Amino acid sequence: MSRTSLAASFAVAMSMGSPLAAAPAKPVTVVVLTRPTTVEAAAQPDAATVAEAMRYLDAVDFDGNAMRTTELVVGTSLAAMVDGLRKQFGDVPEDLISQIKTAVRDHAMKSMRETLPDSKHKTAVLYATEFTRPELIRLRELESDPVAVKARAKAREMQPRLMKIGIDAMRPGQAELDAELKRIVLDYVQSHGGAVAKTQS
Image 1: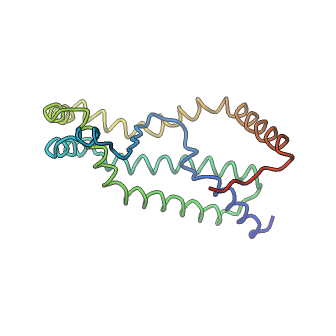
Image 2: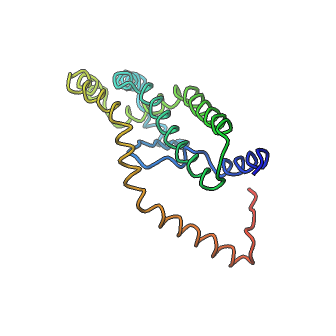
């Protein structure tokens, strides 16, 4: 396969979705924010409680954790993506793989840095909604406990190994999932006259 056709194939493969979407399952807090209704708007926490929530997030190193987690997830996802592409396309030029890895990693880290302040503020609002200001103060005090400090440090060290445990747990069922997805696609193609229709939004 020529480099030109290989690059085109890579582009198609990449367009199927960000490697982050293929990241292995792991405990993650996902915040889904919708436009507030009148009732929801009235229930928004006061500024002092939000500020206390921000101090709590600083105490647990929210920014650092977000950047470290992004780098770890991107690295794991890229490894899986490259392995899959090698199985699909065979011998892949190392310089092409290096360029793709760099582009994806740089984009992910840049996006996280740019969106982090907004994400942090929204997370603080959520905490301020669920906890009172005295409770947030108490949470921050608990985070200064030596055992809590050690737990955070150990969690950072263990995170790659914990992610590997999750990946290993999912691996035995991957062949079954691949077969099921293949069956779904074949059934769809057969039921639509041998062609997959391209929908436009």
